[in-house]
Amino acid sequence: MKPTGARNVRLFAALMGVSAAAVVLGVAEVLSLFFGTAGSPIFAVGSLVIDLVPPGVKDMVIALFGTGDKAALLTILGIVIVVLAGLAGILEARRPPLGIVVFGVAAVLAVVAVVTRAGASGFNGVPTVVGAVVGVVLLRIGIQRLERWRVFEEKRSSVVTRSGSVARGPQLERRSFLSLAIVAGGIAIAAGAGARVFNSMTTAVTEARSKLKLPKATVAADPVPAGAELGLDGLTPYVTPNSEFYRIDTALQVPSVDADKWKLKITGMVENEVEIDFAELLALPLEEHMATLACVSNDVGGDLIGNALWLGYPIRELLKRAVPKAGADMVLSTSIDGFTAGTPLAVLQDEGTEALLAVGMNGEPLPLAHGFPVRMVVPGLYGYVSATKWVVQMEVTRFADAQGYWTPRGWDAKGPVKLSSRIDTPRDGARVGSGEIAIAGVAWDQHVGVASVDVKVDDGPWLPTTLADSVSADTWRQWVYRWTPTKGSHDIFVRATNVEGDSQNEAYRPPDPNGSEGWHSVTVTVG
Ligand SMILES: Nc1nc2c(c(=O)[nH]1)N[C@H]1C(S)=C(S)[C@@H](COP(=O)(O)O)O[C@H]1N2
Ligand SMILES: [Mo]
Image 1: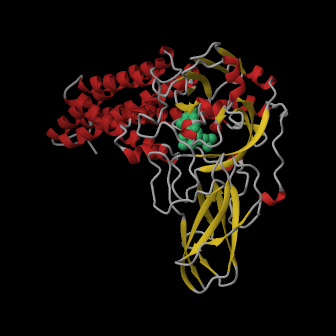
Image 2: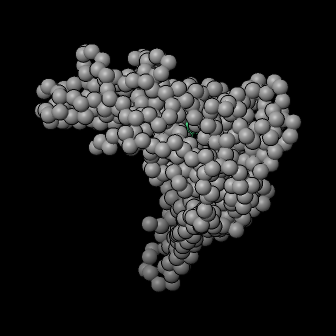
């Protein structure tokens, strides 16, 4: 193909634009290795988009709690970049320097996104600036070469081609343009992707974490009775392994926090500001408690819930040092990545609530994605108002004066976990034999406790299930019902009742604004 005719010129110009954009991003990614991971413009812009999604875009806000949606966001961002860069290339060919202006504006926006991220500094903007300068120079040179090639090609087609001297010009110009566009773009993509992989390995922190030995708990968790684990096929295990624990956060890149530099500050309406570093925290008498953590976005029957053994220091003890002032009713905790949660002060001070500043999860340091080195865990509250990962600050304040991240986005300021139950086996849509089968699942009402779970088949009566042994009110309980089915299709429903005598309501409510409600059901075919 030759750059003769407006259509082809546009195509080649667009190619040059995309190649120049790849160079901008590639250079920025590589330089971010030296200027800090916060320098990545793609991730900064993506994070800014996450934060800016208007509360009205409800479904998207719900989706943003999730992890798979981050890949979707990055894909959309990638498409937008390619389209914009292509257009900028065309503009630069037709109305220079408009293409460069587009690149410049995009770069300024990206730099703003980078430097306004929590914990970023002006320093982190350098990779994007340098990348943009290199990219713009390349775009200009590329478009000039394209123009020369076009002129040669047009001369050639205006001469009756007898090959020879006239034809050699276009060959050279063609090569000089294409090699620039393709080689520069290719190298940039390869180098950028390589830097990204390297960046995401966050080797230093990962290594420090793997060498870290956590102290033994001074207050050990109550032993888990053998009867807490029914051990049935298809039933969620009582303790969720770290590798299978759901992950929800607004972080496009998992923050890698150097434990040696980590500090927590307790500020705001307190008599004494408290500051504690990681070594000081580990030297305190740590406690271990089993607690089930649930996400407010967990829909009926969903899997955004897990149970783990947490090692940490009671938050109430730290608050005793700080001495909250009268009138305070909330603790606004802040993550190193800017996420915030507003937790009722009274819950954190309650002697009967094992709210932890946690460092360990199931016998090892917190995995990076679950908040290494330190996070909060508060039994009985959804994660979005309590479980701040990578926590660095707790400000004692008032609900009237401050809001956590999700509150202005349409979610309730307070998020106590709702009584819920889930059928794990049989799965919805399963085909089962006609012998006896186990209907089994989990039920939870953190900090209150589940008293009974019933199942119902079709329009039949509620049938009491057998509950696994309770470990504590703060964790979920397995349950099982041995069912001898009749042939045909059946709907199975589950309903839990807590120790206060409240049962789950049948009426469905979506997760937004304070947690889902309704009976989980599965439909199975027997025979
Ligand atoms: N820093 C930070 N902490 C956070 C969040 C977040 O977006 N950023 N999300 C919260 C939400 S909504 C939940 S449900 C829990 C999930 O914790 P997990 O990912 O360890 O399961 O973390 C909470 N802590
Ligand atoms: Mo959540």
